[in-house]
Each structure stands twice: as structure tokens, then as C-alpha cells.
Length: 363
Image 1 (cartoon, rainbow, N blue to C red):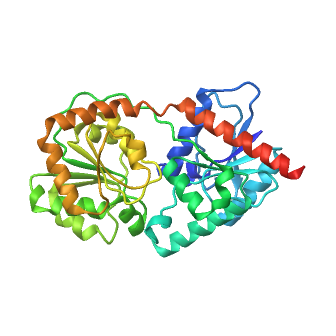
Image 2 (tube, rainbow, N blue to C red):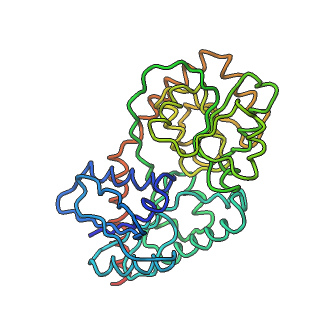
């Protein structure tokens, strides 16, 4: 039986890790295997409504009483062991001490190339967690070859336990045809000042403030953060900030956007790139992290953090109708190249390998 840590579905249901986990659960439910057993665990909170267990995925989700992060990990390990699980799937690097083989999901290693890009405290915490993964985990899954390269560089001993499994992506149903009058769009602003810098929110605001793009407006899905709030406010009506929009509202913005910008300085996968492709909006993305890998030649790639290059990119895309048409056509094809079935198969192989590895070590 396979146990899953479902904490992201409760604690951060709209963030990247939770989205990736939700996609995995959907992938597994859509490709059931005979005799396969699963169970999920999530921390209980006052008034909590547990997320639904996907139809078709055998098992169910159990809420566990746990307070602080450390006590949650202990409660998770104890519950998974008591349930008779063969392996524990943890969707991040904060893994518990347990006699069970653990497969950890490493989404990104930004500090390897960029130092404390997300702030010194967050970077130190994540680096320490990855070191524990290197010591304890029976298997590690990463969403891209770019992340795999970074993990191997930081912890070479993980190479034999590493498996690349790209996230699955199901393109949303197309929105009714709308005028492309929404200007520049950025999806996702990260957490805090470090997250905003990693996602390139500062660059996005600088572009809108650049006189060469005076006729453009912008929409930011997320939060500019306290440090960037003055720059965002200075743009006045030229910038719309959508803090927690619904999925349908995001799809409407994608349908209206003239260009989608993904100016991240580091990225472990990059769902927004595929969302833009599926919506038929031309995408400009940083030549950083996994973004070139995910884009697969269907986006205009630009150097991260260089405003002049991005201004030139926006103007080039606006003035070259043939380029826009080519990228939109290629993007629609690329959006369909991340099937859920491949994600499910990759994860099943990783979990099986971890169980076999742990059995061999015990023998």
C-alpha cells in the first residue's frame, strides 16, 4: 500500500506544490491498476473541509491531529506505519524519520545557481531539507532534467535514486474568442520578497514603467509584495492586480492577454508556460531553469533579469505577426505533450524502485 502526504492540499491549496500533487492524484486516478492500494494523510485544522479524494483512486484521505510542522511529520510517519504502508510519498523535501522507504519530490534547487535568491532563511531551510533527503530518502522525483542536473550537482550521491517525471498537463477548454486587448500578463508572484524576485515580478513592473512600452497595460495574478508595492502603485490604472482569482477568471485573462510573460530567474517546471500555450497566447519566457525544456522551442526565450532584452522582446513580438502565429501554433502542440498517463507511469516506477531498493538494503 502507498501512503501519501496530502498536507499541501490543505495548507497551500493554490500554490505550485499543491497543484503538482493534485495533478499527480488525477493522473493516478485516470490510470488505475488492479490491486493497487493508496491512502492519504493530511493535517487537521479547525473547520477544515478535507479535499476530495479523486474518483477512481482506491483508498481515502484521513485527517490527523498535528500542530507544528515537526509534529505533523511525526504524526504522518506513525500513521503511515500503522496503516501498513509499503512506501511513503512526500510531495516536498521535508521528509519524516520513518522505517518506511520514502520517495521525496524535489521541485527546484534555486540556490545552486543563484545563491539566496529566495532569502537566506528560506534558502538555508530548503538546503537543510535536501541534505536530509540525501541521507534518508529511498527515491527522489524531480519534474525536469534541469532540476535533476542541479540535484546531482549539490548531492552526487542522489544520482542513483533520482528519476525525472514531468508534470502532467491537461489543457483547459478554450474560452470564447475574445479581443486580445489585455496587454502583458504574469501568472504567479511567489511568496514574499524572495518569491517575487524569483518569479521576476520586479522585472514585470519595470517593463510596464519603461517609456518604450508606454502604451501597454499589465495584469499580475498574485501579490507584488511589500517591497514592490510602491512600484506597482505608481503604475496606477495601467496595472491590474488579481490576488486570488478563480480558475475561470485566470482563463479569461489568458484569453484576453496580448502576451504572457514568464520572467522567472529560476523555475523547476513552469505551468504558466503551458497555460499560455493552451490558451493560444504568445509566451516570452526566461532562459532559466526548466523553462527552455518545458517550452520546447514554442516560446521566445530571453535572458532573466535584463529589462532591455525584455523590452526588445515585447516590441519584436508585437511587430512580427508571423513570429506570433508560429509560436502560438507550436505552443498549442507543445501543451498536449505532457500526458497524465506518462506522469502516473513515471511515479509508479519511482515508488516501485524505492520499495525494491529498501528491500535490498534490508536484505
